[in-house]
Image (tube, rainbow, N blue to C red):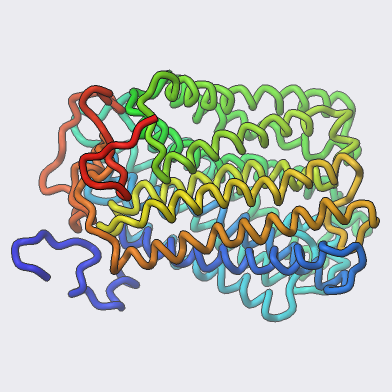
Length: 547
């Protein structure tokens, strides 16, 4: 370590083993980043295989049983081990204390324990895959999962049950930290919108995750001990499982997307050099989404036999919950209007998020409409809608956040040109992959089939071609971000000329973040377009890019 430089969490003097016993929130975030990235590529590998299968109408690459196991693997890994924890566990862990002027999270040891619990859950899931996989789909619908499937449902259910505790502990840590460890002067309405989004997400984690954990425990009890809970042959009710599963799993959509919305709020205001439009509305819309999300689970069950009255109520509530999301989109757009916009890599991801999330949200209104949902239920229309929200939305936000805070995390800049190429490639590849699936679903192609009618082949070939472009788009950032760790030029404390407490620390931050508690006298996002200009990392210093 160079004399005179403050010690940080990346200093070479740390041993490798020290990472596994650390209580530094920044290092735990790095552990999560590595683990979640590995799980992302496990789930992505499954998607590659079944997209290859779907290039031809006949089931000539995979038999039906293996195809079922692949889409189950893809869904379980991507939902429970990537989408749900990615932004909170990585960016939330790293940034939340920095953004509120704290030295760490409220419970550092609990934070480390949450990572170990995540890894134990991932291990059970990987073992279930190696042992032969699961063929129920990521929804584990009964009585297939409890009675008829002869695959390793118990092992995978235990993995998801265990990883749920990681989510609960992380959410609890964030809530307590936000309430008790804010810097002097950092009132609730001076908090960054990133913090508001994670606070709302944490509420869902703490209240909703125990429901799915208990539901999977009931599946294990019925499967292992023959207790009649969901199987009608033993006096159970399979619809009870659906009610319990979707009571958690629809709010889980907001666990996945709300943190991404917090990221996009930071990116939009920074790269438009404007105070975010309607700060209070965006903040309260996060809480509204968290609360209303618990009231709409029944729109997943329009064709399950629930009463028409219940269907009408859930249809209305599903449309009503779209309002807080629309507030965010309108306010981001208003922030961009008249701004001094800089098209750096993080901003490209943020703009991509707005476009893809908006299309995904609008198609969600189709699925909230009873008559339309009956027509497209369990078709590729649902697949496309879900991926426009989750992959087109959350993954774009996650990558935008990684690129935005990468200089703060590592102290290094990445090659800006490659960053822009990958952002455009991902946006193009994503639309080529999933937009044809809207058409497929509307025309009636059911999901989860490994063979299909010949008239659907052209659209499936387009989708598979887009998936190959999308895969390349994901691999390029992995390559240049790893390259930047050694060869990227050093970043100063604030390469984007952004506001916020995290940019007042060195890059990477020192072990305890702040030498003395900071004081926050101003409102958030206090940008002055006349005084701030962002220089592109790919251009000579002092040459700002503007449109």
